[in-house]
Image (cartoon, rainbow, N blue to C red; front, side):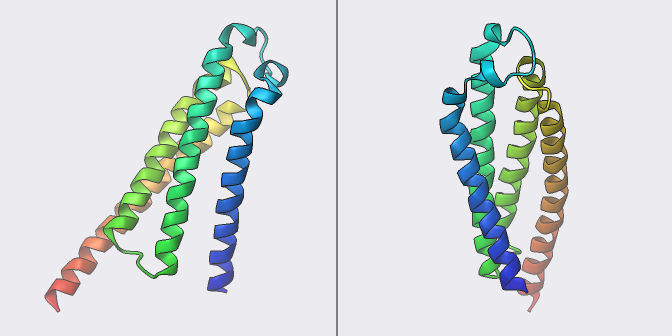
Length: 147
């Protein structure tokens, strides 16, 4: 069961990366003016593209870090400084993506508000998980040093 769960996590991670790369390539082809849900998006096209690509880059960064974190889990190196650093990067990337997606709500897509709040919530939850893993790593190192 553990192997299947890890395989499923890898599959979702790779699928997310493929979807983000597709969006990065397809965004100029789809044209923001055609898929925008707010009027007069032509005046803010550059800002919408810039914010969209920044969010895509942050999601790809978080996805790559998640892939590396899954690799640590597979190697059973969970309570390490590397895992804590990867969780830190993922959480800050989520929080920053949430803040960058918020202006898209006004400029581009009405659904960006939901995406923004989900990314911010995920970032905060990951910050808490990072704190727990960091404390567990400290306790593990202290325990290893005692023995």
